[in-house]
Image 1 (cartoon, rainbow, N blue to C red):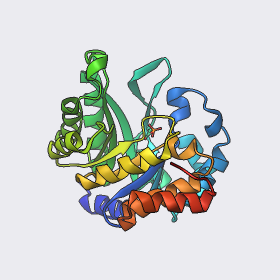
Image 2 (image 1 turned 45 degrees about the horizontal axis):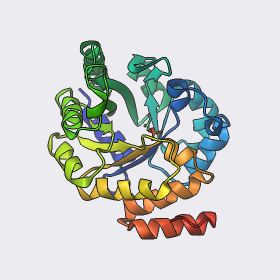
Image 3 (image 1 turned 90 degrees about the vertical axis):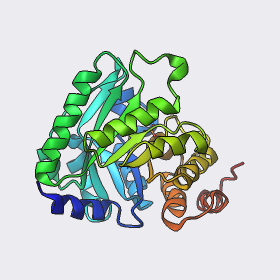
Length: 272
Ligand SMILES: O=C(CO)COP(=O)(O)O
């Protein structure tokens, strides 16, 4: 096992203060067409200009869109996807080796727990971690408790999220991304359930940017390691400003008010 390689890659990815600010642009294949994500090169340019730690992207877009930013932001190669017709099954679409060939600093895999096919999905994740370990490649797992055995009313229950992040730790994942459970008290219990770093997804189309800043701050305050947002960033008219404002909170310990002011200064848009 190449622990040294993993250490070097994690050091590059979490180069600031051990926290993660990454932006995912993997939603088109998973969720269907979003007009805002269609001009993908422009979106990647705008996101990268804000200086995120990493960009989570599928393999075919790495050469066409990501390559100019190598050395400025880390590549997180997304190795699976769900689909609009099967939102609860993450199919493996490439390998860790491809991430090594592309120069990735981490690879990421989705895993939906709480459903009939959980055994298959956790076996995939376990094998993926084993392959990543042979290359010294950090793994970021997107683990969501939304399988068909979990009733709709329980989908944001902290216990299911605690289960998700613990499962990640038990399978050797380095960073688990899951949903925020809505309040710092319940999310602190999620964090306490695991030994891995925990980051949160945005989870919606991101029209309320102030709530995204507040969620980011709340996650950090209870010991979370940061965020991997997608729609909150690229659905915004100014992705660069959103990334800079998030960076102020995540890497400079800035307040929500300061981030909002920075965002307003960069966009000249008043938010309330
Ligand atoms: O990482 C993500 C998708 O892979 C997060 O996406 P959203 O913030 O749009 O939920």
